[in-house]
Length: 429
Image 1 (tube, helix red, strand yellow):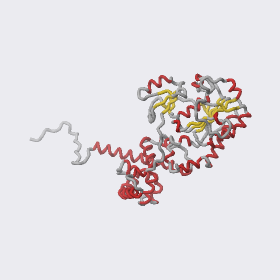
Image 2 (cartoon, one colour):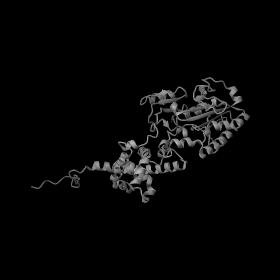
Image 3 (cartoon, one colour):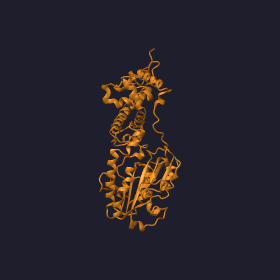
Image 4 (tube, one colour):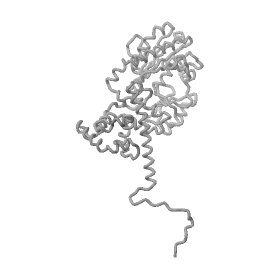
């Protein structure tokens, strides 16, 4: 007797995969991972191209992090890892791809993608099934690995990892958060963050919180982007009174960024070497920057109603810091300004290259901070009217907390004034 007809006549059971073949779900998952890797390599190659070209011309427009975290990059975490690791292995990759003849003129226009893919297949994902560059590396994989083994033997090291230059040993820094007291209170922020992290108050800067190194707050709803503790010190040094307009100027002009090279990951760039860093302070780029900085600072001091001017940079070079301040001192004096001492309890002061440099302030990676420079000009009449009440900052702590009168002196247009006010509860430092 034939079996009874199925009630669901339209249903056709899916065929089972042959023995030894992975289930479809596993295959789909693998395919999705390969597609994600395919696109991440191309995003990383685009970032790497901009980084290498900027580094070669000494005119890098943005840091590696800035380029990776731009809106155009979708898979930011994978792209960031690929860019950093490819840069770390780049000298080895260049040498081995050249010696094996893999990077021919045909692939020169895609050489950044070749480098990224070579790193990812040789030291990361290990396999790839799509993409012409992926196929190129897979076809020559055995030849490349043999060349790497010979390289290790010649240089008497055990593995490729031993070939990687230890360009920089970066000491982890604490994560700093500045509370915007116009939006929330410090205690409420501490209470919420204590649920997931250990939080301490900074002893020097009001409303600054200290979290363990490596704390990831990119997706936290309270946090917006920023820099570091030293950049918070700049605003506190200015300490404008509530309601001030063109009376307090914070001048943070374009600079070399040499003080935040670790945060910028500059130690991964091909140009980063001891010799290049020593020559940087006398380079034509630094001379052009310092000329602009002198012009900007002179312009800031010329506003008739201004009473306090902070000039700060994230540079470690004397040419951008002490030399700029020294060059404008005659003008500043003629306009009634004198150098004041921000954070007198801070031990690291300006380089002793002119009389009065002890009023200047520097921060350094040795302090667990970025390399920053701060100078404070105060008009003498205003300085005489204000008596220190919080350790020598020159204004009360209550006034320092209210920064809604703080004006930022733009570097692109000297006379353009922009209010510095956060729209969210915290700035990540």
